[in-house]
Length: 224
Image (tube, rainbow, N blue to C red; front, side, top):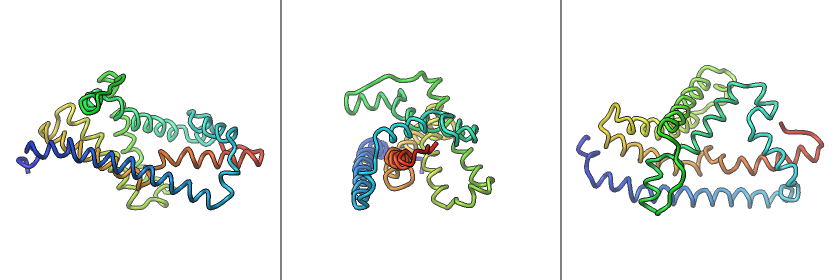
């Protein structure tokens, strides 16, 4: 097993073709899912005519600002963990220095990167939040009631790229090269899974929130 992971061809495969496949599936799958949602909305014939830019933006703004909605204020711990989790989940992979170097090597692009200390903190926040969400699904009866096997799988899909990346950077537990390969494999699996699991809400959120905001707006009410 050790020889398998330390084989240069394995590293080159996960560093090259696997990453390309992951991005192609992620981009293609996301476009397909969003297009399918839009076509479904068009078939209903009441969604797009009902949308209001004013009420859509009002709803989006209120739900994207921490504690701006009543629902967040009623659950402050959940609100804090959720917002920090999503910030770390989105911005850490994009702006991490080691990833930035790979962006530059592969496509010649680069941008601002956080300090290594800040990147560590953001990574640990995501890891801790995954554990928090797991424990909540196990012990909170109202959450456990609506939890299924795929919910645990999604948590694992998110958790594994971050924990392996953290361990690879600090060179803990397993040999560095093995942990790097595992990190790239799990990262690719996460990209592939996004369009086909509930992780896809990163796209659907804006569409569904726009509709709900418009619906409540026309009723002269608020959805927050």
